[in-house]
Image (cartoon, rainbow, N blue to C red; front, top):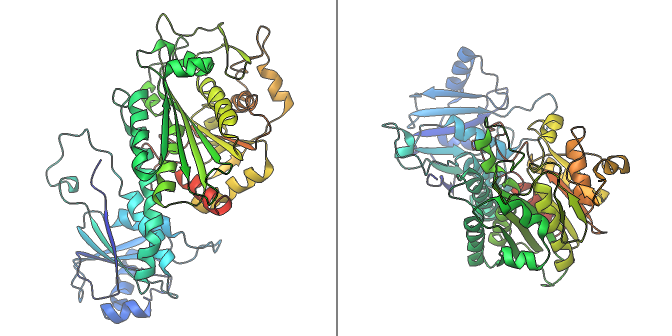
Length: 499
């Protein structure tokens, strides 16, 4: 990974950096406080805008090189005019957008004042979060780099200049704690599978102990003793042993109050097993642990910002590989719950991992609610593409809270149905259930399978197959592994489940 982007906060002063960023609306006017420090730049901006047909719309920018009357070598004019829907400005996305437009500059002064009025410290902190998230790179395995490439030099340095610098600095601590969690999740998803196998993944989760998180790791013998045959069976074809990791953050006033439990699918590599996948694109299956990566990143964020909540993360870590000991189509296995499962397709392995993880979490921790995240089905991408994650829930209030957190963070979820008609599709002739329900409604029948391992606990399943890896890049995500879900669940807990 490249070094972190340098971000600091300062007062509005004359620019000293190699680039100066200012914000305008459709009228091309600067904030009065900015104009007072930078001089009369508006005629220059209007002339350049006319030549470039720049209208000041959001997500547009005008880059003026060697601007007259400015010490900076570049003047970057960023549009923030309201759109037709008059939606409020997303300062996190704005920060990411500005980072992209300032490419190549080593030191950037951002005159963070809105043309129609002051932006407060919280807005400046959100803007800084966007800068940091856009600045992420995973290049630790690149040994050859282009000469004069910015990756060879120091990371860019941004100074967010605001009349609310002290408030922005204070608010940024929580934002950057969340950014660290996102970066950790991205790192885990981006790692190659020969480096990040179950035992190594568990060791990286153990590193959360330095933040005050209690971490426990179960090996295969301990899981087998508990009856976790569904989870253990997935890893039987691999030379790498499986693990189950629990991470406990006790930040609420009542330290042993009922926790929120978040569960992640951690298939560190998924070949499909005996039902082997096609070769094309199989390299992407190193990311089949995106749910588990999110859980580890979330616990890091919560502990770093000292969240006033009790949260437990549970991740099942396996490799799904074919060999003589691998599970086969037609096998019947007993889960920790006692329910039996007929294996129809060994590539439907994530639900086997989650079935035991859900049951273990429910029986062990007596949670107030459970949320699982999993790169579970290709079918969810057929339904929702890469824009939304699929949400399934047995509890309307929990589903509403997740949807609200998704709207607030941009990590959006779309609720999908659960119904008895779908549940019947996973009934088996020979066991209590089978692990696939056929091609149609595949993401729904997968969720129905999971629901059979949930009692009365409020529960939500989020299928992140379309958003955790390989999703389209955005203003705040340049990475193949997106770290999706850390911000969503952090916001959910902050808004609804903290003291």
